[in-house]
Length: 85
Image (cartoon, rainbow, N blue to C red; front, side):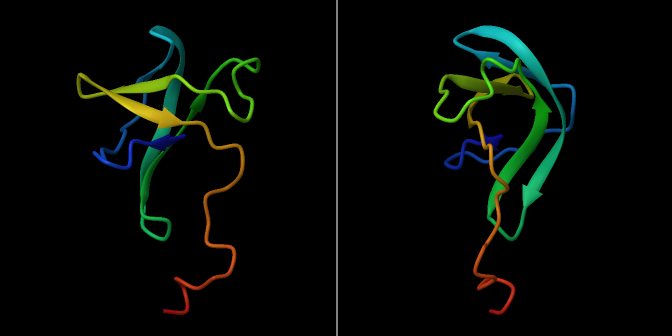
């Protein structure tokens, strides 16, 4: 899950994942991904929601709801340009 880029905040673990206002899963771990420049979280959601294009996810981080985007592919720099900078 890619956490809101405009107001970055890192998860610790055990945060609830909401979809359309209902708790549907939880975060297991996460942190800031320096190479991609975003905060990422790993967690569990029901299989029927784990599809490309599913919107409406939020993660509660320290009492604040943060929009999140489901990522089905790894977040990386495929050309390796950041590593060669």
